[in-house]
Image (cartoon, rainbow over all chains, first blue to last red; front, side):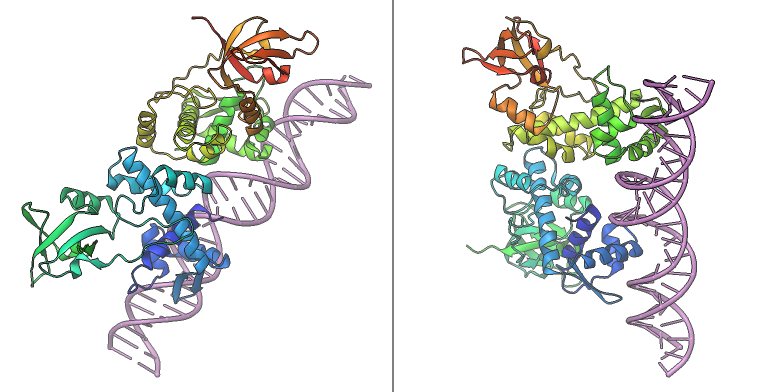
Length: 221
Length: 221
DNA sequence: TTTAATTTTTAGGCTACCCTAAAAATGAAT
DNA sequence: ATTCATTTTTAGGGTAGCCTAAAAATTAAA
């Protein structure tokens, strides 16, 4: 049974490995976990000893198959609690992440099963991130980033890259929630900033940096 | 902010000090916490240093006023989560205690406030134990033990001394839940065992030992 | 290709939490 | 009042989790 620091580490490796361009080092992990590289080295040693992580010293860090299963268990708990906090306790979507960071570490398979049932088996959390199944399946095709979309397309927001409360509050102010349709009116060829329009409302701008934090799928049904 | 072992220790001291005949020692606490007396001595030192516990070495252990406030915060969280687990997730009352042992350590005042609101401010947990208010008030008058009641009286069960799943399952089989009315048909003068009757159903026996684990109040209104 | 800058690991130290075994204090019994 | 059994504390040791500073390995640059 993994301990709290270990669970957080598995989760961080899983999250970072979503980005295939990024190679995972002790310092990137230390940043993610708000700790120091030397502490990560130590943690990684324990996780490698438990066969959850594959570590080539000075080279690479990655999850083993068992490690991925463990990481997905934690992510499942995290996202189910987020749904509960948002739907039933009325927390804002930028507040739920922090509380779920604590709830996710509670180990009790039947509790998680019943929570899932109580919530009617949600497929995504309040940020649009998919919830892994009990057996560890997860829908990983997040299609595209808004920053890579073309002018004129109708798109639906499917989730966000970051869970930073600041970023999520900004999305909330723009009324950009998962499921919302947006239309790209224009893409600035100089700095890549976008002019968007939300279902017949007035248009607004976002920077390319912001657009690169928003996952979208094409509206075609 | 108290750590988990410290919270459990504060809770255990609070629970043991409900019994004024029992003097609290490191060994009674060690039994309660399923640990060793030497570990308790160490813990108590830390808690005394934080002014939550008053410790006269070799003599006595008791909670300070601040310690009582901390203990009641933990008890409040524990009992509110128990209500949630029982009412909403459908756990049996003998199962909720163990899960709440984990949930109670989650520190987030707003979470507790909203949980309380969501549950419509319950006054007791599923075992009939009173839930402390946000400001630390708790209804401590549990009236009497069933073992001290008189023959012929009509009584209402208000709670239980023990939270052992075995005991609670036994109570469940007898249909002895908080709020249920019972009538004492007879008290055996030799061994103190009781013949009870639950609202016009057939009568049944319980031992004095069992009766001494059941809190009751007199039915008068 | 050798040096310099950067990154990663090791070494050593701290706290919380747990243990066993020995020492000290207490209380009861002679 | 002294001895003996019991209880409590201290001493010393282990793991998880964190840190800083030094050493080692890697990468980049001259």
